[in-house]
Length: 405
Image 1 (cartoon, one colour):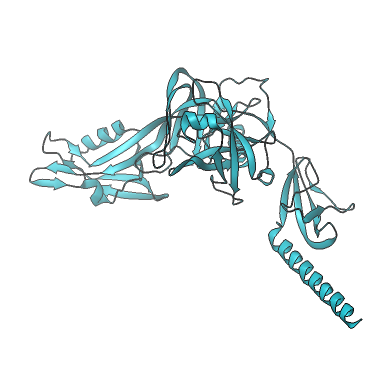
Image 2 (cartoon, helix red, strand yellow; image 1 turned 180 degrees about the vertical axis):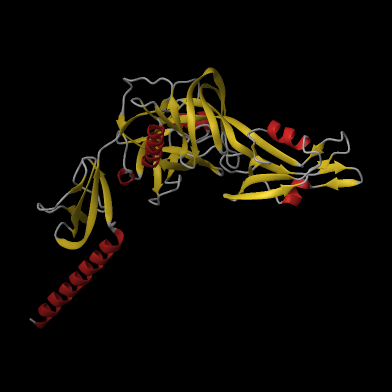
């Protein structure tokens, strides 16, 4: 009898410890808040914990957004914690996959290099002496805005040997320096020893289009200067059609690249070149194009998915991929690790290549993200951004345009 009592006691203690451990785990692992679309239910991400809404739960907010308090229960029975659930309306967009070309003109000029000026009796370093460095963005010289290399050349050559007041952005902060040009020995013209860039062009992939507004999103990351690696500051930009004429396959250590050519004619205007992609307005859209829901980040799961991309011509195709890992942190464009599993795509490109950035990722019939980067040492794998983050940026642009109208 005593043995039975001891056995029951031991089992009871074990169960209590087991339940206590699970409750502690749930308290830490289950989020304090969830966002769901068009439904008063939330996925905790674990089969052991359920999100239960009491019948007398009170919702607050507008018709677009509502919040309520829900109880998290272990095995749908043991209370663990309370979480806040926010319900938002489901959004729909038309997925892309088509190639596009873009031409951007910088807001100011980007310093891509600092050099010397040969002068009588030696060498001068005007820009270096003034403290100007690679990556700086020159905005004004002597109070005059500069937007091209020609602007700088004209102002420097007409300085009459006097110091120039240069307004620039250095490490994200405004800065003003005094720059004294040097007279070049070869032609007697004044020079400052700088290499600058005032424009850029490239080919990417459309992520999605909102056919009701003409809003367009692509790339999933910024267009960066090839020398500095920094995002090109956008003043104006054009969106043009593009055709993929070939592909350099990616190999370990060498990223591949889609080879595209621009079509004639501008098809839209670019307004944002940011960390989460490029955004603009298309001149024309196909009003009846099929739309699909945009997944919330909480709805994206590890497992099979598809990517839509164009690796030849102008018509996109669907290819199988796998979402290998998900990062829940906000504010970054590297939200997922993806792996190309489609044999046809691997045969054509070797995996993810430059030019595929922005290719939409589809899972369970929803747009969940876009390709952003390739792993240099493993072209089969790369990073992707949540579609929800790109849609948030697109919404911000739309509001700014509406306010400006």
